[in-house]
Length: 113
Length: 118
Image 1 (spheres, chains in turn orange, cyan):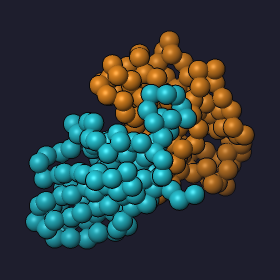
Image 2 (cartoon, helix red, strand yellow):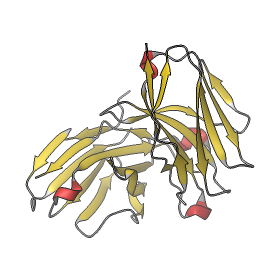
Image 3 (cartoon, one colour):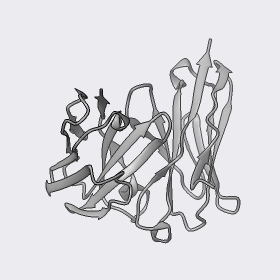
Image 4 (cartoon, helix red, strand yellow):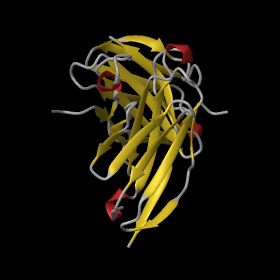
């Protein structure tokens, strides 16, 4: 089982739709959680950190479910400009062998008119 | 503020040649990470440094790859000799710290070097 898993998609949604992605992680001791956005041929850029209590930034909501070991990203009122690949990243902590971020393979989102 | 700087942005070389990729982290960041991204394998961590010291190089593919960080503002990733399977985008990232929570753990990526080995 991979340490961090995502549905690769693509998710094809119309403008204005609500779409949600999940990301599962295998190490229950994982400490920090992030969502990154990557546009084609560009570097990953931090979209938002994921806090235990859940957090929201405009149209984006991130949540953490420690019991089931997954994080989620909800995008409301999708825009064409949201089309990108969304990477989740997890810090497995020292129990995972050193401190580092493990990235999922990414979920591709395509928003169409 | 300047972000992570990488050079060159594109590199095309022939098999067997030496390739050197360069990275300047964000000033004040104590951690520097080298990643490789391919369609098949996604984003893979190759090596990371803390205060210029290599901490984990378990992701380095083989002896042909080496990385150095002679000072806090400069790191290199070298491939010698290069092979076609090394073709990928190589990213450098830096973070303020590690293990202190979201703010310190957040990694900021450079624009990457797109390497093509013919």
